[in-house]
Amino acid sequence: MRYEGSVYRPPSEAYSLIVQVTIGCAHNKCTFCSMFKDKRFRVRKVNEVLEDLDSARQHYRRVGRIFLADGDALVLQNKDLLVILDYIKELFPECERVGIYGSPQDVLRKSPEELSELRDHGIGIIYIGAESGSDKVLRDIKKGATRAEIIESVKRIEACGIPASVTFISGLAGKDGWEDHAVESGTMISEMEPSYVGLLTLITEPGAKLHQDIREGRFQLLSPMEVLRETELLLNHINVNKTCVFRSNHASNYVSLKGDLPQDKERMLAQLRAAMNDADLLKDDRFRML
Image (tube, rainbow, N blue to C red):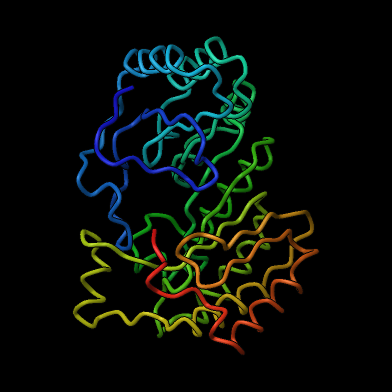
């Protein structure tokens, strides 16, 4: 296997074989993100990807899941993705699911027929970073997509039978915009009804523009208790009609929340309120990480 630079994957892909289909991220302008700032985006040659899959087959007896990296591998045209997916099916008949990162723009460039084609050839989940449901926050972080575009992209994914896993970030609006961020993110989840939602808490690293803004006082981070209040407000504004798996148990979070919406909503809210009344239930900042 050949890897270039640091390689990132969703938490749920911890035991997956990771194959770089692209290097870096085609957008790479989000102010909170430093993951791909040291890479110049490019699409790898398909034959290189197939060679890496050959190499993996020689080394691993069983591969249950495969994740296609880097930041938005869904940017590939279907004709190239299908070659890779069909080779995976041939080489790894035991593979239960292929996952992939995609931006809202990547999804909207594909027709419903193309998305269904990807499903039929093995794509079992698409991960999308929504980050926020607020158009103001999306503009501030230079996400490159609007609230309406993100909602439409997730609806398209779900409509063609592929589960969408959508990520949001607590604290992303700072002290000035936390209420708007929480309410708009909750109503966005209600409107697009993804299969999975992951809620992280903002941590920045050198290389991200927002990191410098924090250090120089242009952006004020929420306190742990303010993060919990924001999460409470977000949960209160989620009203879905189908089951949505909700996870806020990332290493960055102050309180670990796990449940299915809508049935576990009140239990998770009670857990949040208990933590707001007892700071000893919060994870210490020393143990939080990306």
